[in-house]
Image 1 (cartoon, one colour):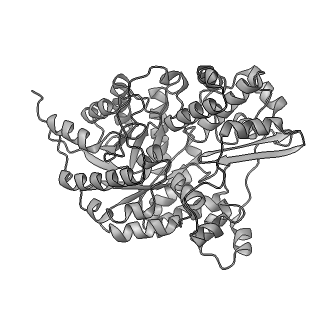
Image 2 (cartoon, rainbow, N blue to C red):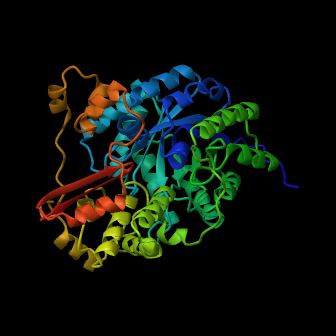
Image 3 (cartoon, rainbow, N blue to C red):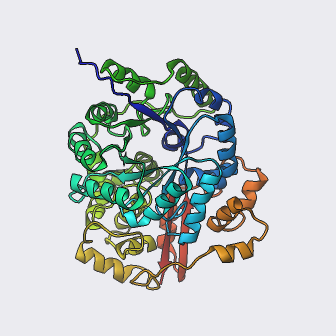
Length: 488
């Protein structure tokens, strides 16, 4: 029998953000949320994850909902809940970085619209890219969290994460440190070395643990993390749990209590929320999360679950199912050659699409997306290690010639944007800066049917880019994938 552990573990709910991002392609609508929010408001969560930049993006481009209105309505429906927002580096909804004045206004508007828990992550763990936003959020009065983007590689050691955590504390005075394991790669053995190492530098600040069930290990990792000193766990409510999402709060809370931990959430209210989303899933034929089998190959390619399933289906449609394992092997090879980027947005897309080009074309790195060339040149931040020299040379040679070999500082954008949209509120202005054409107007009309205006097979679009004969730039954007290619 386990010795009682009286320490309290606080729960951060991910149902309204990351869980449906993983299982419903981020297609949870505001009207799905609002009826159940008064119940969630009483559960006793430490905080509730509501909006990352992906949710803003899908609201505008696919659901044609005003994301800022979702934020305001959620705060009205659950006034006692501390809602969280997650910022992705300096790019917000796109891949390329935005000027500092846009990123600063983004943080200010998050706070003005009610967010009191604001955090940020960078896919390269380059603290330069997020320290400014975190300092601003803290100065405004927000509780801030700095995320350590986790993966497995020769470069992503415990020492690397300790150094990153120390930099987040020293340079941004974050309220807590979050272990962000988007690939579900943490094992029980690794958490046993990582958390104690972090605790030495984090000291009395809380440590949050966020993982995914892609390998089936996350529920065990969470229990071990709690034993080792993690204070807050990211969990979602069945049926939006397991699969590619977070572990289920129903199961993890029960197991933690059996280990003697104190978990102060109201189980009967969680059951009501579960019933609410189960009814939506059944009515709208949406998938529900189920536990997955362990697959050691996941540690080789580390491709996120949604991207993996998309590749499998698109190869099948293209009659190239026999290339699936070859594509995964190529992804692993490209990742190693590109200095082991963490396989989260945008770098998972960079690696995946470069691998597709290599496999389809036959000659490796003969076709190079613009973003891959920018990556190796440091446009997205400081790389942890050197790119393979031969690959670097091929990327520079075959990539677009109009990309400068050294990134230049970005000029402020707000003055021009305010002049172009003089009657827009700051909330609307930010959306107009980030979305070209009439996307914001279509969102405002509220006339969408929930379907993407750019449906289609990604491989077919990539083949079209390869077949382009005329000089110019081809650009695709679908869900959380965007890539450009310059034909010279």
